[in-house]
Length: 156
Image 1 (cartoon, helix red, strand yellow):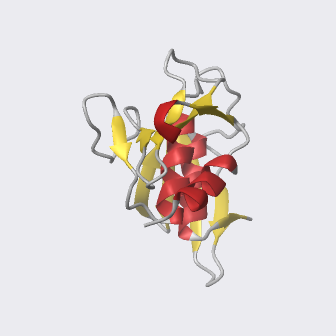
Image 2 (image 1 turned 30 degrees about the vertical axis):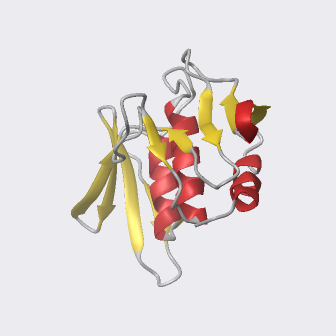
């Protein structure tokens, strides 16, 4: 388990979050640019290392009735990922400018081993192909970028 100091260093590495000290030595971190009424990303980070991240709109994470996920036993990487996903989930991307790519165009991404993936945009979805095989599909380009980074791919 990461200590409070380690978790604080990770959370504070996100410049978009603002620290708010609350009762009993606990700390919250707010995302003031949230597109929703909900602004707290990190909730009640406690001196004993326990704490929560708001993940109601993040797919793949079980949350409690308040939309929170306990981060007590998260690794550094897991904590960074869930915080980034939480921030993205609170950001309205509908008005954001998407990269200009049409269904006739594709982006090529490669890894250090020479594997190549193709990314295309068709009818509101971003598709990732390995050769002629569909690897996955995403709703936003940001999800594509995050996936590719996690898998070790870079845009050519």
